Amino acid sequence: MREAVRAATRTLREAGVPEPEASAQVLMSELLGVRRGEVLLREEPLSPEDAARYERWISRRLKREPVQRILGYAYFRNLKLYLNEDTLIPRPDTESVVEAALERIDARPLRVLDIGTGSGAIAIAIAQERPGCEVHATDISRRALEIARRNADLNGARVRFHLADLVSGLRLPGGVDLLVSNPPYVDVRGAQRRLAPEVREWDPPIALYSGEDEYAFFRRIFEETPEVLKEEADVVLEVGDGQSQKVLEMGEERGFRPLGTRRDLAGDVRAVLLRWEGGR
Image 1: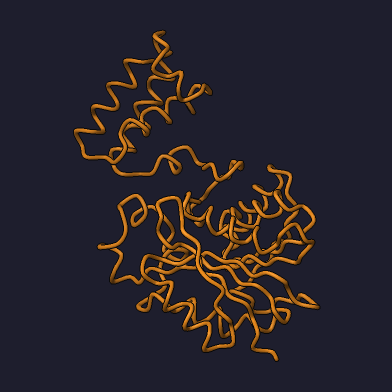
Image 2 (image 1 turned 180 degrees about the horizontal axis):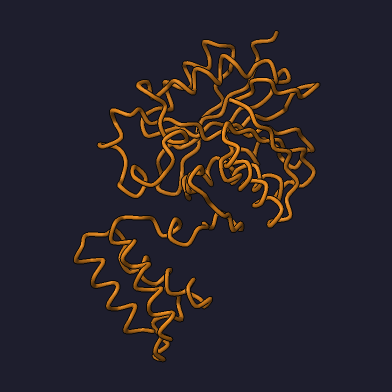
């Protein structure tokens, strides 16, 4: 086992694949169901079947296919989330969005709406960590909602899923107290420059790209969501690098008061916080 991991690491490193050690070790640990730290301590050989599968997985990683796509699932906070072709891989950056949302909830029972839920990562994390909340989630993709429902069931979270383009046709009498979203915020022209192959070539374009305008979905959120928001509802949105100030200004023009920003684990601004006050 140890020699197989070392050989795979060398192969990935020579091919320029990012984080070769992590890729080789995680794939082996998931293959055998052992802790990642154990794979370099165990010397027993792999079975022919496991060796063949591991070799296939490493071959896929050499083509820059993300580890999570190879496995078919990803870990997010304390959740295991299955993926399909219509869902983004939930990434650690988005945990800052969940943290910001939990701060706004502050243990109070609230009605929460996650727009563009994908695998369900944000909605399921909130429902699991704040079970007193009534959590709703929308997505335009039926297949994404299928996997999100499966993930909610497997993680024991109560989330009500709705097929909708943002909030189109959504009926939530009384409105929501907290809106959260990780919308598409990469314009197609900037994809080559801003995105790694693991993202650009393997995440679904409908969930990744905002068209020619990187702010298009933020504009839609500010224009279309007030109809489902309670007065003074909080809004938490994930943003791309360098977008936070512009998004806060756009929201303010539409009646959303800026409340601040939150940084991700790398120290980059990853979430903006606003409050809906335009109904006054």
